[in-house]
Picture 1 (cartoon, rainbow over the protein chains, first blue to last red):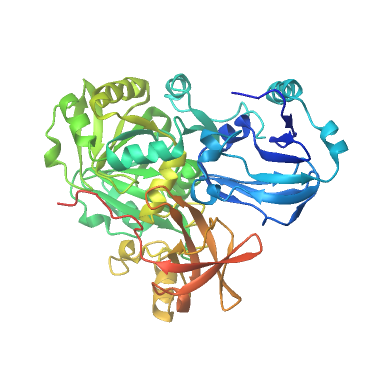
Picture 2: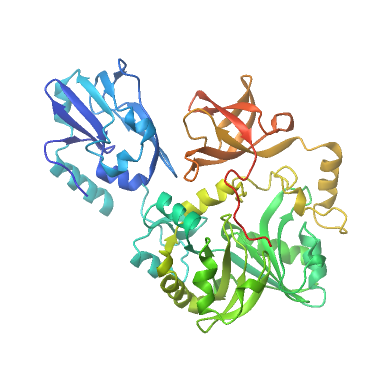
Length: 130
Length: 372
């Protein structure tokens, strides 16, 4: 499993990649593996708002439905509509073509509450050994 | 995250082989079973295009023997077991007096006075107790579930995989018939049955020899890229066929008539448990029906979602998924009979949003079983 350095991670297994005052959001390699084959993604409309650690959409695998949580508060400037036709991109390229939202960051301080790649991996180990 | 599997979960004799194959496990009715190996969609496609092997050893086997064995089976099941010749197989249901379903099962007649009932894993204890109670001591009834391993080999290359290992001619084993043979030396009951809509076999051998049988079949299927198949793909495969799953589409609160299983309810065969209630229901009219639903809007209709027509709740989904073969949302659910006609437009309430769907004929995907 891969956890790129430079991204920030949530306990709900989303990642966020900051580029200037905007950020890309998706789910982690761990999340996509746990879900299995993704068959459906429901995202907010561009222009809408997402709120820190509140659900912004849904990802469904063959077996399960999971909420998606926003790593930061902000305005949605773009959604990855490609996922509506090719949801499997979430599995094959979770940090690349499987991105979900591009968000205009509303409160940069929230980023500091998220985990680094190292912290996220430690968090996963802990959860596994729980 | 799901917690670690509790220690009390039951395991099949093939558990270690699944671990080695990299299976992901799930608690299924008290059993720690492989839900997937390579991935549900890949496994699904392997069965639809070539061949796959399932460990279904969690399924239960209950044997009924004695001079009055047929009478007991007739009393307990809704289909007409008197029609069964030796080695013939029949799909049937066990019902309560009120017509609700105890379980669905396959009935094998292994000898004139010996029947094997293959029942659902989560229902073994319940079924066994029910059968003993209703038999009133008129036959010898044994639960041989732990002594038996069961494998399902399914797909168009199933026969090509199995035949070279086998000392009987499989062409002679017709759909819903069985035969006793040796598969690479292992004494096996082989039936041309399954839960996928593909040609294939279900095989019963001793629990101890289960792992050997599994290895032999995986080896023989290598030229056909055989894959081990988990419960995830088992579910998508059966759902594409519109086959009911006990605990979801059929339960103690639904009758075989409501579930579209009227073809295995033989009201004229003589008395049986549930007959009166089912005859009454048929006479008065069946108020709700299990139907196939296909999504028109994007989305996945899942179990327990409400089914709406003109803004009013007319039913509830009992199973749903995205069909890997058709790449669209399909499912089963109960609707009021007036909404049960194929083509009826309905909506499914998906997390508060009504999504367009329609009542569809099942199977959703054309059955490939070899009936001739």
